[in-house]
Image 1 (cartoon, rainbow, N blue to C red):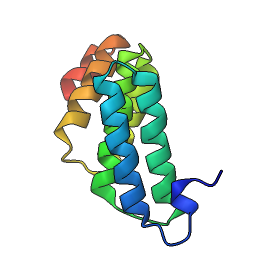
Image 2 (cartoon, rainbow, N blue to C red):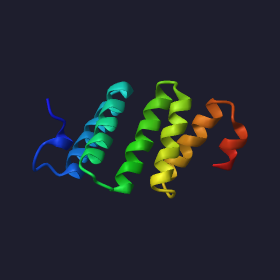
Image 3 (cartoon, one colour):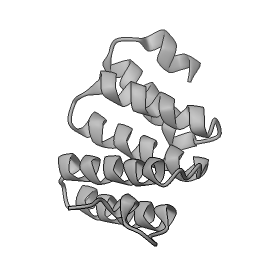
Image 4 (cartoon, rainbow, N blue to C red):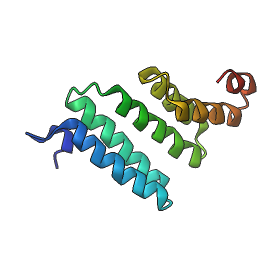
Amino acid sequence: AASAGSAPGVDPAAAAEARKAEGNRLFREGSPEAALLCYSGALEALDAGGCQHLALKSTLASNQAMCLLKLDRPAEAEERASAALAADPGNCKAVYRRGLARLALGEARGALED
């Protein structure tokens, strides 16, 4: 099956927004692993479509960090939060999530810097 991002005539940002909405629903329902897959798919749709929607990419990466924190995978959460901040340094949720990840990793100094 073709991904939504590679389907002809499909706007990559719209496909990504739809996957983000699905991920948000799954997360609220208590399925962070499934939500993580939706957010990853949304980022893939943006990349496949050559879309440089930095605010959306930042939000998706930050949401991935949230899922990874919930799944007790702080090293990956720290990486995704950092990716979110690379795309949008003003993403407050990403700063918070990276701080939480760093605390979980025992990096209190790094958490305080955030």
